[in-house]
Image 1 (cartoon, rainbow, N blue to C red):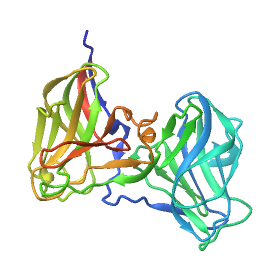
Image 2 (cartoon, helix red, strand yellow):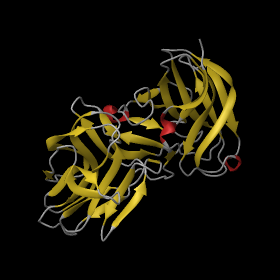
Image 3 (cartoon, rainbow, N blue to C red):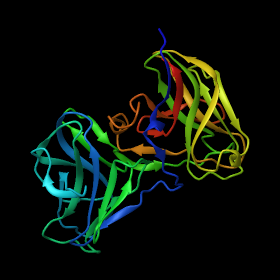
Length: 331
């Protein structure tokens, strides 16, 4: 029988989305002997971690090797250079920009609930401005922990899920195997002119609203939030006739009358501009579909980006998603 609840279901549950109109990530230079970067997090499940990952944004000259590892935290919560879980610190030789998976020389035995960090720092051969890399250092969704860490003369911290990840021996990805922010600017005259997520329900539920995230839209924009069934029938919608009424950016909760959703059925939750002033739905682009569907993003394996133009055929993109969610009040 149905269970009464009140819960946000979907990717928007991971935290506040980045409010940026630029797809590329900010970064941190690793161009002298002291520079380092890390991502500290809580391990979500037992198992064997074989790889750590991060995104290289800049490749200069002929960079020297760097040390990369899954490491412990010290008493102050800073990343150490001590390998976690019986693993081994590994030497990484940069080859170019892009997402990088580094296979640990010895895997880590991961224990759910323990804290650790992915850490990259120079070896005995120091990089310099002409021969070095930069790594991405910007959140996609923001909460207080996990935390990104950067070192120049002291550790500095930036809250949230950035483009850092680990991979277990069964291929499960924890973290964000992300390579860009999805920041498409759409209005009634663009291609596409509707954008959101295709989703599949794993249970029967009743939905009474949605949470959406915007990246720096023009304040005069208007739009609809629409929930479609698999045949493109409109099940629910909310109209915002001026962005000033809901704030020009950030997360927004909007509601409608109860709608029944069926287990195994697919739906689309989309943003549909109703003016020529643009909106920018906040989202993420992943290196692979497996990165989207890992163990970090709530329902990431059931939500993916969808878009269309002039009420035409939908295009689905399995290595992207928009930060959205549905409010449910029964399962």
